[in-house]
Image 1 (cartoon, rainbow, N blue to C red):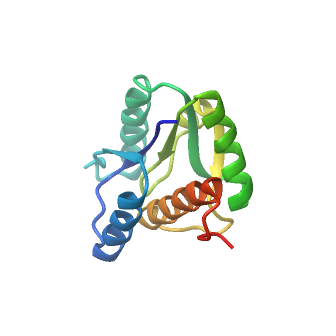
Image 2 (tube, one colour; image 1 turned 45 degrees about the vertical axis):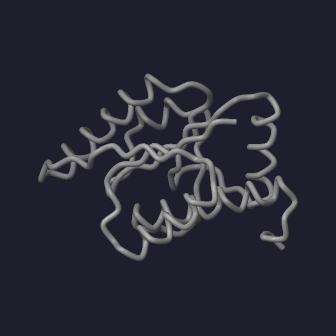
Length: 149
């Protein structure tokens, strides 16, 4: 199963960048970074980033799972189970993570699923790190390793 993470912006915080690298070295997920908008107005920034994500999503295959605070929460085991079902069917997933101002309804409407990482709110850079750890954890749950206990 091919999986990718479509994310807005470059990682600027060194410890988050290092944490993401640690999990990327352990997984087979591709990260595609969409440049953050340089607009000063937050509404224009939000709109520009959402349009860039939608344009990039036109070239994706498989399902689109948006990471958003409005989504459904999953335990790590349930998340693994859902991804394993898709893997068994040979269906890939593109996960979408917005920028500092989130995602438009248009991006959410493009999703096959909307998933939340937590009931709490995190900076978007930290969301990337949390997601990559969970993606690694899912792979380990599917493999039956001792990482998740």
